[in-house]
Image 1 (cartoon, one colour):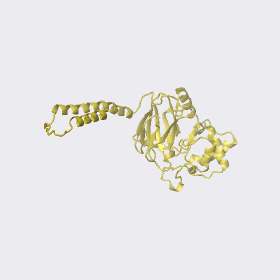
Image 2 (image 1 turned 90 degrees about the horizontal axis):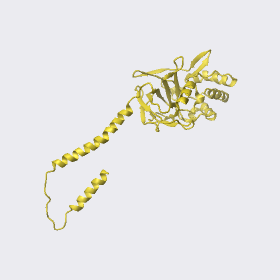
Image 3 (image 1 turned 45 degrees about the vertical axis):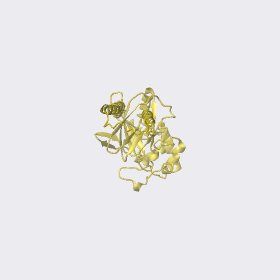
Image 4 (image 1 turned 120 degrees about the vertical axis):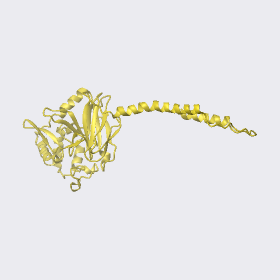
Length: 323
């Protein structure tokens, strides 16, 4: 609109006051018009102020940290190359918090405050349909608020992606956001806080043995054992700006069978894909997992443990049963 008005006025002046043949009249020479100069200074100021105020207010509203009893608090830790989610207010009778990986589950029409940091390099959390991007930086805490208007179909969660180049498998550090009704979300929480069952079949028991010997070196799982619960695998904590984050070496697998994807949201959770992954992870997701090339305290992808076909089949039976 401004362009059309200005260009129309310029064209009119050019035509109306153009020099004509035989007219040697010299235009009146004037220093300026103070009233006009004040006016065309005030008008843009008013226009810019009217545009700028709601924008600046909106920026502050977006950056405000959601808080209160009705806000779902989730702590997010970015890893090379996967996402860790801890629901700090959702605990079982022992005080163990709900921890999962790569698939964020939230209730509809509820404010969700994400408190985020990184365990290694700079990542960027991005779920395009729900919010903008927010950098996830080591030794710093950032926040983002998510609000989902309606539940998603079980087979069509909102896709997300790391939006900051973070190393070899950057393209495959994805995530899924499942939005559920409040009742379905509460049921999901109860299921997630239920420990994984100790295997009863020979196949799953053999897979459980392999899990303890090999997988539990990095992965965590909480299992029901001897009338209580046992936490398998290493769990560490990192403290940033007074906030303590759970920071595992690899995704928690307690309820792995319930997830729709694995490999940081990259592959559908099927027996065929799992077999391919367990046989040689780096062949389907670019990583650098050489054990002699890992910086202290970091795992750059899952190594190939050269598992036999029987060990792979037994592990798949175990993991699919942990739902």
